[in-house]
Amino acid sequence: MTIKVGIVGYGNLGKGVRKAIEQNADLELVAVFTRREPGQLEAGQEGVRFEHISTAEQHKGSIDVMILCGGSATDLPEQTPAIASMFNTVDSFDTHAKIPEFYDKVNAAAKQAGTLSVISTGWDPGLFSLNRLLAEAILPEGKDYTFWGKGVSQGHSDAIRRVPGVKAGVQYTVPVQAVIDRIRSGETPELSTREKHLRECFIVAEEGADQEQIRETIVTMPNYFADYDTKVNFISEEELKAEHEGMPHGGFVIRSGVTGAGTKQIVEFGLKLESNPEFTASVLVAYARAAYRLSKEGQSGAKTVFDIPLGHLSPKSAEELRRELL
Image (cartoon, rainbow, N blue to C red; front, side, top):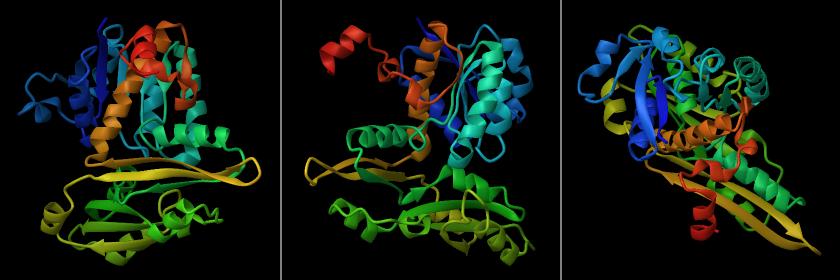
């Protein structure tokens, strides 16, 4: 059985999803849905069908899962409930503070439509969330720490590009190495958000834009930059293309705890990624398979990574998994 997939949005993440679908024999790309004129995207994209987002409803019944590749700042809060009213969906909504509110909104839309929506997947939230849960359950006496980077954050880069006066930009999340070393040695310090990471932005401003106003808007932006030491650098478009075209990222989830009479135990999960969007896309595609399976089982509403059996991510049968991986 081939799972038929649609992609909504064709930026870096959407392109990564297309590549990931090509690596999974049980998935088939039906179409890419875009707010842009489809003809603008077709050049050099042989074999990919582009449709305007307004035509999505016409594809009900021919697409099993829509993978939503918009940004968390403004796209997904509107798109996910709207698309979930017609299709099973998967998204990577990553504004941690707003996930409960987002879940409720999507859950209501999906329940009413009888569809299933996997929200907030990717690697954080997503794989890191699973590892935080696992480590906390195993080591109830302890503390967990999450570090991101050094790398390009797609969500934060998207947020700065939406600031008035910004023509282009990229944001790097930088972990404080000295703090990581303390935790790996078994310390369990109380750390503020500001003590764990720095954020560094490289901005190409529109001609005539007020750079100081741009800087102030960024460093005071709630949920993204206000709680961090943030450095804003203004550079030329040429510099941005020459030095900041790649999208590496990574990070660690570390839990330091004790068992028995004070025996130190440390659990660590890490990622080192050459392409953040391509890896995130690969996670979304695996969860699209799970969304399809859960829907076929009769489930509906919003789901998170905590609600989904890991076996549902794999194209292999339960028997194969027990034989090959257990």
